[in-house]
Image 1 (cartoon, one colour):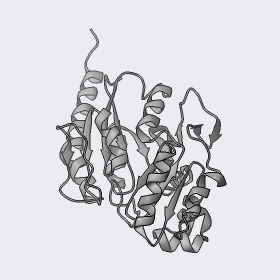
Image 2 (image 1 turned 180 degrees about the horizontal axis):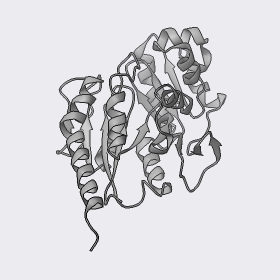
Image 3 (image 1 turned 120 degrees about the vertical axis):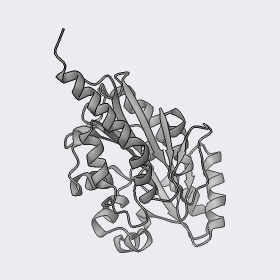
Image 4 (image 1 turned 90 degrees about the horizontal axis):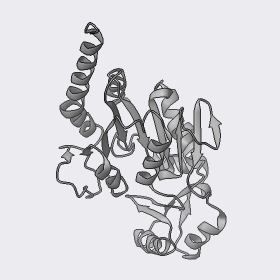
Length: 280
């Protein structure tokens, strides 16, 4: 057995995929990393349904992939020691509070044309996001977060301050303000590692990738930190992070090929040599 359990911890949007949401460019390397012994933790603002669609479409091995969905609203893994219910092979634990209409009344009360996914028809979600119908339907099935849009960005900026003042998680991206009563990605990742015997074995070596401010705390706590540049100027406080020279998906591919793959390959060769050596 390997003395080290390599883990790739990655955001999806802006880190693994660009605005096309196509995993095809990075998929061969993700499979390669898992073949070389790495587990994958996808920490994203996407819903669990969206991530499960990715896993189905790209035929990823569920026992090597863990999920932090809706920015920490829930976690999913095959080996969680505490969980609320099953989704296929996954044990799912809810960490956030499900949003109710009263949570969104704040946004509607601002009266500047704010709309969330739940206010839109599927074709409108498709037009706003560029997602296919199947993925748009999955994106609309939010439990813990809502992505709010408005023609006036100043409205979203004012709304973010209001929700922050009320104690909500907030993240203002290029087009959406995401709000929720959730712990955030980093706290959810900590819980995931605590509840997974594999990830929490004490042997995990975590290589974390992100692009936006909500990813930076994850990168601070990882063994290695990698930033894929995007619209966000966010960077971790640590000085030893690696920055890709281009955005996703090419940026993630660059970082993987230059830093992660050689290390994983060396680790794999070392393990193979130990297993082949005659016992004393």
